[in-house]
Every structure is written in structure tokens, then in C-alpha cells.
Length: 381
Length: 233
Image 1 (cartoon, rainbow over the protein chains, first blue to last red):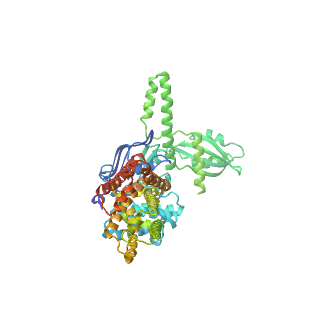
Image 2 (image 1 turned 180 degrees about the vertical axis):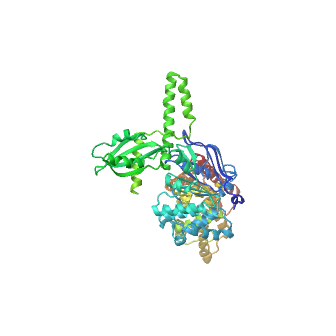
Image 3 (image 1 turned 60 degrees about the horizontal axis):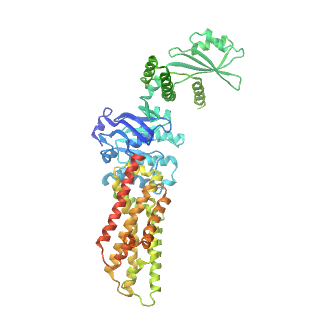
């Protein structure tokens, strides 16, 4: 193992520098740069078709980039592919494997492909089988294994040869909840002595496993930060959801009585005659206590009062929406400029362009609806 | 590289293809042997009978159809199943991967050819075969097979559909076999006609080089295709 592994968390292991990938006129990955430090678990997050797999395929040397540089542990993937590839264990999307081989044969073959020394090969194969929990099925044909085990076999194939870097493309796709949990724990366990890049479009997964998140949308990096910071950034309002029985239709008048309420909005009628409202206030103001005091006085019965947790999901949606909005605004503003040639507007556009990752709140009605639906789902779970 | 060769040869026999290949080849070979015996009107030329078998239609024809069957899966299947990703992200270079695929298919052919020595044994029981000429014939046939295999692998690298890969090879083989018959002077360009020269018991250096050059050309083309696909994917 690399000696630098003992000094963890300072050395840049993977460096992606101004990488662009074009297919004809279509730009799949657009000038992205990020690095991964030794021992980190980094999540590549983005909607389907954002360029996550393309990025991973470029890091592993499966496809060549149109422009830019990628180095793994100091080896340039284009110039020294063999050495760079030796540092990487790759689990591609869709967990491809040779169906006609048994799990053990496949892992052994992968070990041979990775040029693992003959002396330690057998031992390593056994170790990896144990690590991924494949002991019971190691002699079964891969085609007869369940999806979860196939995933493990693929993971074992990536693990064998003890690479410093593990690249896992959508490692939990297609698994049942129990298997997802198992694979996640396995990744966490592996993260203790490996540097891991994993891609996902499941946000909760990334926030649970990863120390840092790279959010990609339409081939561009939208944000790079820790999951906590991303959540923190999108949290600058306090949102409450309250379900009440309000026979006298007094709910909307509450806003005049409680001055801290910035926004009070009717969301929907429930089947049982209750109504759901959304109450927005400043971040530091917690209205819950006051609501419990005031509402009964107005003959309003509270059935449910819920604080909206700002999750990574919201941060993600916002970032992606924002990157769309910036584009839209840019376009529309530019049109106006060409019409009026107003200098001030040019400045404005430049300002917008200069705020790439900052999160601006634009609460539209549609977003609120999404939010309530999410809340409900969360509640049911 | 050895790992890939080992695994490829193994998968030829894990799927029925390896057995089918050797089986059909030996059946065709036996039919040729039988035809030779039946049409020699009692005067059996034990000296050259083994060589004649190779020049019979079934032997040649079967190879034009069987070799594509052997090579069609080499890259097409990997691409379709996505295992290509495992192969190309391993530290093994593309050149070695292509060579490994070529050698493993050649091993299957050599196994089949090894079985034909059984006929030599049968013949020597009744007469004295011309062993050196027989060996030269086998060498010529191996060279022909190498040319076919390399083209088959090239065809397989062009597509992810095994059937298309096989069709490309079969059509090409049949064309290179039939077409020269219709063109004046064309016969010297036919891979199969070159092989007939070997059946006379002479190792023709020019033809040997032509076969090897054709093989290398196809393999280089395959490597180029694989490398170019890397930036086009």
C-alpha cells in the first residue's frame, strides 16, 4: 500500500482539472475541476444525465476527455494509463460481470487483470470475499445470483488488488432497502482505509455516506461542499406546517395577531375536514410556542404542527433550479440588453453571473407544493 | 495478458461454442475423409490423403462459417454486457487485450487441428503418409486460420451485435474466396488459393509473410478501433 496512506487527509489523490467531454456538438461534461483528498469519501450528485458516469469513466480511463487533465495519485491517466489504473478499483454502473463465471472465479480473474502478485492473490481473493460477505455464494454462477449479491461481486471485483481509490458508480441502484443499508455500511467501512468517489442521485445516501459532495447538473459543477454546509446554506427561513380544524375560518386572520409571521398560506383541505397551512418566519424566530398559545384562543384546534427540516434534498433542488434560473435570467436579460443597451442592466447580469454557488431563495408556489408532498412522504415513513 | 487468455479459453468451453466448433470441424473433416476414400475407386493414395482432406470443400467451407462463430463474441459481447469497462479500466493495455483475444481463439483452432492428427494415425495404420507434407499443410492451414481469426476479431470490435460481427466476417470470407475465381489474375489474391500452395508440401515464404502481414494488419486495425472508441464513447 502507498506509504502516503498513513498520513491521511492532506494529500490530493485525484485531481480533475478543467475537464471537458464533447460528443460532436453536445457537451456532456463542461470544464469541471475538483480534487479528492486522501481518505475522503466524495459523492458525485446530480440528476440522471448530468454527467456523473461520464466523469467517472474519464477518471478511470475508460473514455478519453476532449480537454483537460486527470491525475490519480500523481499519475496522469492519459500519459501513464497503466500506472494510474492500478491505483483504482472501479465498479461501473449496472454492475457488469461475466455471468458464466462463479463469483470466486470472477474475483480471481479481476485480481489477475489487476496484476496482483501470484503469491498473495489467493489470500487477497479470500479476504475480499469475506469483506463483501460472499462466502456462502462464492461458488455459485454469477448469473444465478440475486441483484444484491451481483452488486457485492462487482464491489469485490473493484476491491481486489487493494487499490487506493475506489470509484463506485451508483452502488445502490436496484437494491431493496435492506440491501441498500448493507451496501452503505460496507462503503462506510471501506472508507476507513480507502479514498472513495461514488455517484448517486439519491441525496439522503450521499449525505449519510459522504464527507464532501460535488453537485453536477448538465455537465457543470453547481456546488462543492460538505453535506452539512449545503443544508445550512439553504436554511434561511423557518417554515412550519400546521394542520388545524378551523370551523370559524379564522386561521388567515392569525397573521395580524402574530407579527412575526412573514407569510401565511393555505395549502390544502384534508379529507377529515382539517386544513393545512404553511407559516413562514425569520430563521431565528420559532413560532411553535406562540401558535400553541394563540390558536386555541381563536377556537382553532391544532391537529399537527411540523417544522420543515431543510434537507440536502432541498439544497439540491434549489441549486439545480438556481442554475436553471441563472441561465434563464441571463438569456432574458441579454435579450433586453440588446434591445435597450442599458448599461445598468449589463451590470445586473454580470452580478448574477458572479454568484455561481450561492443559494438564493425564490419560493414559488410550485416549490411549496413539492415541499409539502415531500413532507407528507417523510411523515408516512 | 495470460489471465485474459486463460479466461477466454475457459469461457469457450463453459459455453457450448468451443465444443460445437471442434465437433463440427471434425465432422466436416471426416466427411471429407470419407469422400476421398469413396471417390478414389480403390486406389487409395495413402501418401497424400491427409493433405487432400484439407482441400475438400466441407473443410474449407466449414472454416469460413465456424471461425466467425468463434470470434464474433470476442469484443461484441464484452461491449454489450458492459464488461468492456472492466477490461479497459484494468492496467492491461489495449494491445495486450487484443492479442489475448486473438491467441485464445487460435488456441481453440489449434486444439481442433490437433485432433486431425488422429487421421494421420489411422492412415499410417494402412499405409505410409507423407508426414512432412502433412505438417506443412497444417502450418498453411494454421496461417489461414490466423488471418481469418484476426479479421473476425476486427469485425467483432466494430459492433456490439454478435450476429452482425459474424455476418461481416462470413460475407468477407465468402467474397475473398469466390470473387478471385471470376477475376483474371485474381486468384493470387485469394487467401484460400495461397493455402493450396502449402498442400504441395512447400513452405512458401511470400505467402507466409502475406498471411502474417494480413493478420498483423487486422490486429492493428482492431487496436485502432478500440483506441478511437475511447475518445468517441
